[in-house]
Image (cartoon, rainbow, N blue to C red; front, side, top):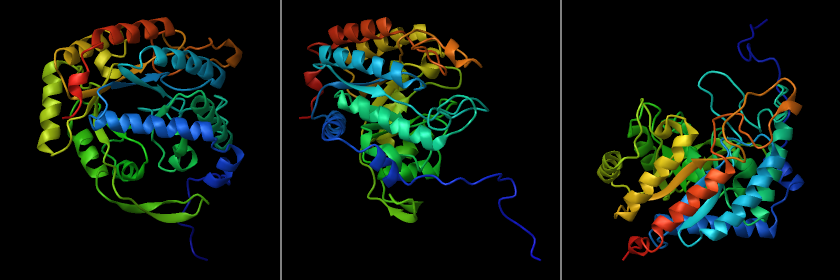
Length: 357
């Protein structure tokens, strides 16, 4: 008898509905499709300098309570209208959380936050949440972590991030080359730019790789390359990198790689030492750089929820505080509104010169 050589550490393989089946359960509506496409077009126009505005990716560190998430989305939709002359606002909708070691992996992986890992439920509910946000007229952004997940909900996404831990991954660069959205590659957790810059370069090229089709079958995915990759500065290695010197160095790195000088500043993570109360200071600094003539910073990211701070996930989920993050600490809604309205005033009248000749 031949000795068993595979799946030695696997305790189960459960059937997962195909992307097509999940999309049948939660179909894309005409209103949602219009929102997604308009969101992508605006982002691409900003990156092409056809639109002089900046974009803002703002929202919770992660979605764990769809009710609170929709509450936040409704408020953000109203705020987006107030600042639309200067900012194209996109809601941060993150379902997957890369962990340094262990911890809750996100709504899709464990929607009930009880280690039951009902991924089928998480995928369907996650897609439904994205549909609800899009039907409000608000485009959504997410981080692409699992290479299969975009097949399930990528049609509802307008902007995608490749995180600091995966920017160097060939799998994620290949995936990004085929995504229908602009893609922001973050610098490494040690603060170096190489992985992010090389990620943008790699994703701009055609690739062929193994993946899944809509029917859930193994397939060879062949891409044309994504021309809307850009660099996201999130700090790292014990220091921020949103200051003028760091931005200038990022510009030089992109120019050396013969890539467009498009940079997004993440106001959270190492740029604020993971202290949410410092995010407004980061945003204010970046807005003044733009006001003083910077042309490379095209967007910012902000971690924000209804309530400030963060909370541990309790054994009794009824004890969760409504609208408060269970992952990284966020600024409150009131602070978010104040940040964007002040930034809007700073940039008013200063952006038309950023339009391409």
